[in-house]
Amino acid sequence: MTEISAERVSGPVDDDGASPVWDARSKALRYVDVSRGDILTFHTQTGLAERQHVRGGAVALRARRGGWALVTQHNVVALDAGLRPEGLSVPLGEGWGPVNDAQWGPDGLLHVATSASGTASGAVHRHRSDGGWETLAEGLADPRGLSFDPVRARLYVTDAPAAVLVADLDDAGRCGELRPWVTVAAHGTPGGTAIDSDGGVWVAVRGGSLVLRYAVDGALDRVVHVAASQVTGCAFGGLDLGDLYITTSPVDPGRAGKPLGSLFRARPGMVGAPLTTALPVL
Image (cartoon, rainbow, N blue to C red; front, side, top):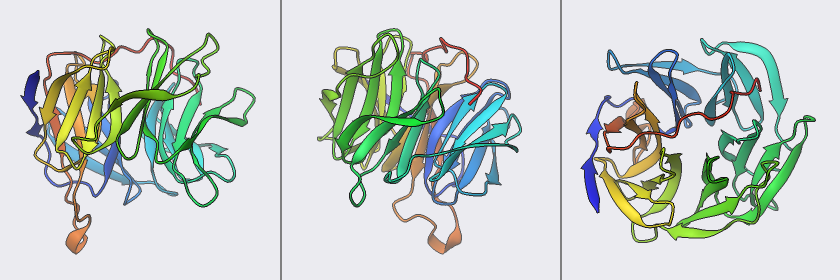
């Protein structure tokens, strides 16, 4: 077992940091502050963080060709490279629970994870090429942490209270039945995930002050210690994709109206999985 300590690289900048993604174009880390509905940009060369409020809130941010796809609780909005709306949006499906996460599949289609709420169960949905939505998996509680391993044709999803699930992908990119893969019950609640170049899955753990790395066979082999209890997400970045950036959320968000969550970084000795498909337009 390899144990690693993450360093704090920002001051208190967010209330609920999530959905980190590396922006190779500007050499910065982008992520969202879900509670405040903002996009944050951390400039690695200066250590400064910028905040930009977006109308309709922000749940997830993903790179797309020429810009960004911003996922809110109601739609997916196309932003240009400077995070300005381009006037194109796609409404989400009706009757869904709250949106938790979103990720491009290897088929170039957006996948969205939603929580159980009212009569809606937790589910994973895919945006079809004809503009509609289809539900790929349901019966979940609080799915998030969507990650794809296109080399091994797998989809990973975390679900409360402690499960990391996996499904195999067919040639069309559709996922089969989700099945239990590992549990983080001894550590906390799983959140966001990232995939490294060897197919390992890095899982942010809320309530555990940890990011855990599981090998393809499900063996826990690396632990990153974070000086914050609520670890929400992680993403590889840096010029060599060898930096693991980690988002956090404070236990008591917004006390006295000030953000309290910070951004952390570790050098785990592994690199992120390279992009294997062209970025979609939207």
